[in-house]
Length: 122
Length: 106
Image (cartoon, rainbow over the protein chains, first blue to last red):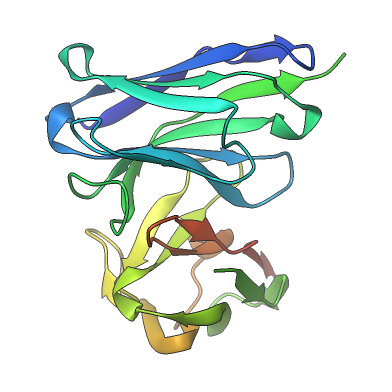
């Protein structure tokens, strides 16, 4: 079964850091691009970041550029999101999603995890 | 590219037809337009990609159409399990989503 399991969320204060993880199973992880997508409470989906199968390219939404860093470890079938300088507006459910092909851009997201919740509050 | 979905909420009776709109702020290739369904408390599920191709296992009552800046998701006969939020997405160089349309029981 194809599966993505996120972890690492929690309650943190503004200005602090958090690292999210996503472990993949049921497919050849190093063949596919991957994404992070978030959903604030009661809001729509917002793409956060994407990374190519070999980490050769990545992209970020303007709202997180310079603060968040996406990475992957293909040997561990894992995707990461390092989030620094967190703000209240980063509060959301963060999903890990698989791209349909090796790049993250120009391919739809065909598998999603259940998400991990990040709450930024003092 | 900004995607605007309308209406925000659509009230429909079971068995009726639902038509959801997704408008892009500039012309986009239909090859890169997708629709996702999200039920309460659940993760998004891919319905349509390439504007009109159904994903694996999606019933044929779901259909997508459109080009340029205007795209449509049509559910021909609403089943009880179809009441959900629907998101359109442009999966270009920087993917973007619309704000979603909630389909509720009338």
